[in-house]
Structures are given as C-alpha cells and as structure tokens.
Image 1: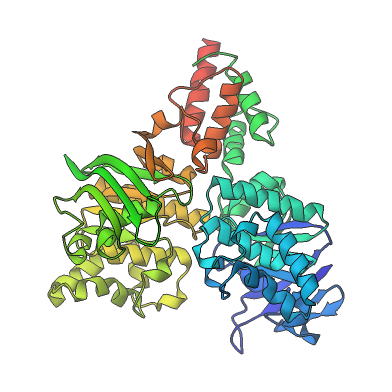
Image 2 (image 1 turned 120 degrees about the vertical axis):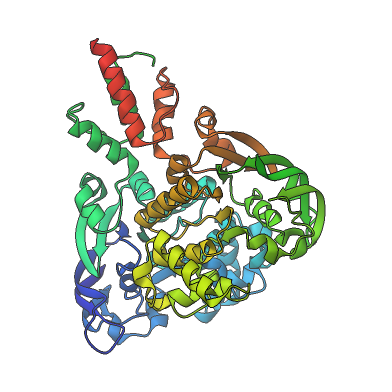
Length: 276
Length: 284
C-alpha cells in the first residue's frame, strides 16, 4: 500500500507549495488515474512514490517504509516509473541491453537475466528486435520497450506518465491490453493523464488534482457526470457524458447511459425507430 | 485555386529501402482547412517535410514526383524562403522555442529576415494579440504551461504572416482544455485571416469539428481524400488506425441497430439537433 499523509512540497526553500496537504491511500492491485491540467502537480506527486522527490512536510509510505528513510534505488524495485518521452530515455545500443540494464544494476545473475529478458521481450512482441538499436523502433514499439524495461524486474507498483500522448488507435488498444494484463497480475497501476476519453474507456478510481490539491477522489463515472469540477480543474467532460448531460438537461432522458452501446440504444428509442 | 499540389510523389530515406511515400497525389485550395490522419508510421510527417523542402534538401533519399507550394518547388527553393510563407509547427513546442522571454522568442523568427525594428515590434504585438498572449510578453519561457508554450510557438510563426500553416500533432502533449483552445484558434486563423491549414493529428475528436476535409494515409499511400462528413460514412478506425471520436463510435453503434443518421453529426450540438428533429418528427 502507498500512503500519503499531509504531504506538502515546494521546489524552493520557502512558500509556494506545488503540492498542498495531500492525503491518499493506494491499495494493492488498484487501477488508478491521477488527472488534472498541465501544472496541476500530478507528476510532482508521483515522483514522491519512488522517492525521486522527498516531502517538504508530511510523509509518504510505500509498504510501511517512509520514503525519506531509503534511497531511490531501493524504492525503485517496488515502484516502476514509465515517463513521458521514452525515446529520450534509452541509452543502450541493443534492445536486449536496455531491458537487462536494471536487472544488472539490481545484481541478478546472468542466467536469471537471460530468462527474464527473453520472457518480457516475448510478451511485448519485441523479441525479433533483441539485437536492434532501440532508436530504430517506431514510436509505439519504443513505448512498449520502455514499459518492458520496467516490468522486467517485477515492481509491485507501476506509474505511467501520459501513456496515451501521441499514440494512435492501434497503440492505444495495445496499451489497454497491457494495463489489463498488469492489473490481472495483481499489480497496482497508476496512470498520470489528462486524457479524459481514455479514462472514460477504463473507468478506474480517479484522483483529480488542481493547483497542487486533490479536488476529487472516487469513481470515474461520478466525476464525469460533474462538468463543473472537471472544468475547474482544466479538464473537459468526455463526449459520452457530455451528450448524456445535454439530453438530460433537455428532459429527453431520465436515466443516464454508461457505455457507447447504452447510448446508442437510448438514442434509437428516442428517435422512435425512425430512419432519418 | 490550389496553392499546394502534389503529383505522384514517392520517397524513401537513404538509410532504408522501404518507400515511406508511395505515389501520392492531391491538391489543397486557398483557405481550405485539411486534416491529415493515419496510424503512426504511415508517412504523415514525411509528407509534411516534403511540403516545406526538408525533404529532399535536409533528409536525403530517393525522391520522385512533383510538389508545388505557393508556386515554389520545395526540392529546389531555399527552405528559409518557403518557411517565410509556410509556417510549420511541431508536436513539442520545446523544439521550437529558443529565446528566454515570450516577446524575444516571437521576434526571433523575424530577426534574421531583415525586418526594421519598427515592423518587428508591430508584428510581434499583432501576433501576441491574435493568440491572446499579450499579457505574457515579458514572461520567461520556463514559467509557461505547455498550452502557453504552444501558443508562443504559434505566435512566432504567425509573426511572419504565413499564407499556409502546417501543424504536426500540435495537441499531443496538451491538456483537453488547451487542445480545444488551440483548435478554436486555428479555426479563427482559417476563417478570419484566410490562412490555409494542414493539420496532422491523432486526436480526431477535436479536429473533425474544425476541419473541412480529411486525407487518410496508410502505409505510405493516400487512401481517403473526402469532405469530413463523407469520410465518416466509412469505418475509419480498424483499417486505418486513427482514433475515432466517441461520437462516431456512438453513430456506428446506432448504425449496427439498423438506423442511420445522415449526414453524420460531428459535434454534440449537431447530434442534439438531429435528435430534437427526430423527436418533432415523431410527435408531428
């Protein structure tokens, strides 16, 4: 479990907190989205989970360990981070070495490394590239490599920063499968994102941030039915819910819809079965 | 009148034996707003590079066919001459911002093109006003949000008063609100200043509301060239790897139930209007 207690953080020495009095509990096996506008404090918050940043005030505990008491290298074994521009983070000449890098750092023996790297490259459809340079891969493949290089050491918590940015439909589909796979393996998956349409597809627990504070912590669906909170935090309502709000305000529907199919069904019945 | 025309353009980078562009032909008229879509790696960015001369002048490779942009041939015209009339905005504004303050950054593109101080000042002020960022003039770049940086980068391009704007996934790193603002801004530049726009984007949900026409590429070929509404009578998603807007997914689900809304509504407002009409029809 990750526990955040009265967390305040400032990059300078005084005042101007970019995180203000954050309190959270993130359970094991949870799927969570931390949402908010650029500059809301999302990335600053998650950098506390693996100790890259230490609280100015308050505490962050990962499995009862105070992040202030241990180095990043130790927390990293539990908390894997996948940052935004994966292509800027590669430094190995071969895909294989990129994935093996952390395992070597953590002191795994060569036969375990070889077994683990092969396994993860296969899962992520990257085995055929094992001897290639990471830099010749396509954007989507690089994103997969970045995820594989973290998952290979089997961290309990996975943080993904803006995983859908610049991704096409095929890559989004693959990303959804990877997230489902991680969740089904009991991992805690924390998505940092402002992609409301993507979050509307997976409906995790949402923590909404604005100006360094938590504005909402709960079900995605309930949040998406509340355009005011979303707009105050610089986000927009997902289209499905925007359509629902408009139909409801016009008195055309009483009960809402939760899925694209439900919406279609409602609309067809509204149209009275007429072909327009 | 067409101001961009591409005839039978094929290109492969010299480091690869695969053609990234295969026999592409299309033209764009003055003041059109065109969306260029397709899966990653389909050749969109390569095509944009060919329009402003980065291909074949900067990126070497095998180049066949003809391109004309504002009457210039990008294969032989100096790139600086093309980019003084054709603005090009990248995905990540960080790649396009050079100076320390907003005002100086916007002036940067003018500085080495020999404008007088007076004219530079006027153009910078004008570009900031259009983009609604006059209040940021003396701010330092690192104090800006991603959306603000993207506006500064765009203002720097506008200061050159381009006739054509080419934007390569400008919303990829923007929040939904900033992305929508940018789209509204592009629409204004198009309708009020008559700037021709070619927008490359994965996020079709916003782009379909502002563009008039869509080009869809697949594996280096141009597969679809249609008015936006026409295009969504096809099933774009599976085959072309584009992110289909939620509204279109709802339309598809309605279609699967044996009903069709025609022409397809592309905004929530249009959707609501259609449903209201259907309601009246029902009651009447």
